[in-house]
Image 1 (cartoon, rainbow over the protein chains, first blue to last red):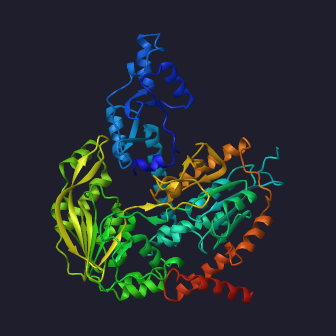
Image 2: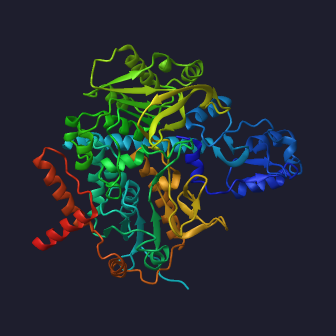
Length: 145
Length: 473
């Protein structure tokens, strides 16, 4: 199973923010869309970073007056990105080992979506549930015949 | 304008499901299981018979997989379920018609076409989508006039997914092996006369990445009339695959590689056919003769590289070879087909949706009352059962929307009105009781020859059988 399977049922929205916007705006965006990270893009729509709940928590602990900081001040700049053809099994391993939870997806260099570790887990769970169901049906079918 | 919320005995929730494949039945089942909700489901399919790819896709020599239809039969026995076969959206009914008769519409039409390889020579005579061959041997009414030249000696199947494996296996089966299945009579006769001696199954990546399952690969090793051949150097694990397996050990993958390597060690036992499984090759061109027929397939050798997410992908090395083949089946993926009047996401070839809610491309907001599930929602992935959690996700959205009153307001929300409309547009529509009649006829025809069923494969044949039966009643 590939990333495309997840993106296909995610509509067309990718929640983004500009680097010069404030963390106050970033928090509003995370809250409004119930997401854990927002993709940071420049005026041309090019991915320049990612800002996650974790980045903000880390900053908040050492600086209580973080709200007016810009996104670019604390965002993660070296972002691992995926493509629609990447495989969920490989991604699950990479995300777990490298301890990150959001993966921006680029297609031909263009941002087409973002998938979370939760998306990957759900897709894999559904795949396994489906396989179990199909195997059970076959076993029952075999016994009945 | 407010009206009573549907879902009661007085005002049942009326749902139209487009497509009678597994997803449609799983969705109907989920709806019927909701306590305290009265639902009426009308299920439509463009072909006369139900069950979608379980009937027309699953290989005839895999009957056990088809036993899932017993569960679908149970769903269909619900008193508020109706099936209308031979009814096509865009031909007999429009989305507007559905909006006038149902509170909710569920599109589950699957992925109906194949992806193209995008290489020169793809349209030469003798080059076919694997899905058309599958539909043909499974007796799908739309594909019975297709011609496949089985008089050639070599065939290539591009891809190593389950459709590719099915096609290669069916080409390699002996007539005796096939005679006990529900393969169409026409295909059985044609395959009896097949002169194919060698079938190539072509994977673009290595053995560890091949999509086939271990039971599928083992089955190939047990064919009565064909030896499996693999090139030893192509089933050796490359360093990247070995590292990936070491980092995330996976018994099934290790076993798969082991089985393939065991094929490499065994000399062919002299069976009449050879099934050659190739890895790390991609077709770059189909070669043809002056008459425009395929005579060969040119392959480039690939090497694997690792993407930043850890996925191993193929990259061409430039090393070329040409296999002499007279028949090519491509099975490199499937694409959904847009439905008239329904938003489509061309990039992923699915209905534009969010968790199954159809989304309007302009406003990016859900379209009230329209939903999707299965392959036309997420693209072609998984096994039959994968559509169960998929359908459940969409049904959860339907129930949530119903709970807040976001349903269509049909002007004629009765089963009788919908039935009258459908019959006026398609007098030859096939009901579920009609299908049970056809089922009995097919199983009866099969019993005589020791087969699970002998399918009725022509529309005229099906309608005539139903007319005869009606006459006898």
